[in-house]
Amino acid sequence: MPLPARRAETGGMALAGEVGAYPAFTVSRDATVVRAAEEMRDKEIGDVIVVDVEDKVVGVVTDRDLAVRVIAAHRDPEVTKVEEVMTPDPITVAALDPVEEAERLMRQHLVHRLPVVDRDRKPLGVVSLEDLAASGYIADSELRSVMKSIARAYQLRSLAIP
Image 1: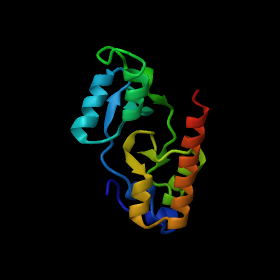
Image 2: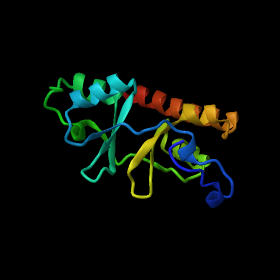
Image 3: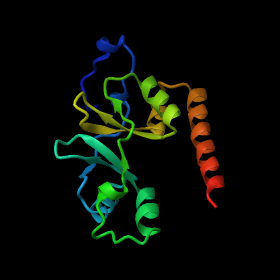
């Protein structure tokens, strides 16, 4: 657990910071995509959080971003910077937010991973839909509903591609 239990502050609720994967794996916004890919390979993860010079979250880059925005676009990974292909200003969840807030954000924004941040927006880790399922704090029916919403959004996007 990356932070002390602070359940008194949240009325005894489970906290988003208690159920995610830690530590946060980060790269700077001016790192090359090769560096991001190496980090993903070495840590066996599918995304890295992009930070600015103050170590605050400014983006996320995923293995899919590398495939679609670099390889399929015929960009040189040795010179392409992470900030050119990242998803900027990602939705985040505060470590001291209740786990239900993470689930709500995933549902609202149709994402299945959220950077977990401290009060200064510095990354602590990542909470995924799978983490919420494993935690047992969110009802299975709620998780299925979020998963269906995300899947439907992907289906609609793929139908829109000519």
